[in-house]
Image (cartoon, rainbow, N blue to C red; front, top):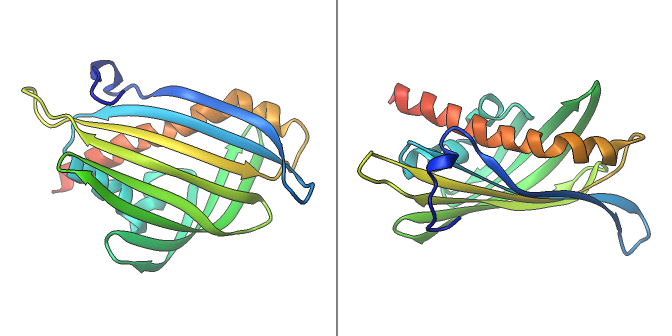
Length: 192
């Protein structure tokens, strides 16, 4: 929705696309490919949204799926860290540990992208990559920021009907990330 009307997204992030499909790696191993695009809008400064995304020490408090995070390095524009993630749905738990590299790129005076990708993974996934695209959309009503979240993961199918469960509940689980981003940013701005 770059440049479009975002008024319907305040407090109500939406799914642009979400899919789960089978993927066979070159070595013949079967994986599940999960991809999605989501967007939301927040009555917050872009700098506060970016600060919330980049606040790795607080990530386990911001995003419920992140259990723990251990920093290796952070230059302010490049961060490398180990993250343990757990997704719990219908009594099933899917946990993974991976080392991520995040890169913050200012794409203009009113926009930025935080790219992320795995650089080391456990046996629960083949890879994950994606981005947070953030645009300042401040208007007469005050600060406003548009956020688009994109992700693509290749996941090891560990239990029966995992693909079906991911298709039914996965999109909503990822939308929850955008709601949690808004809530954490609101808490951040109230503290400051």
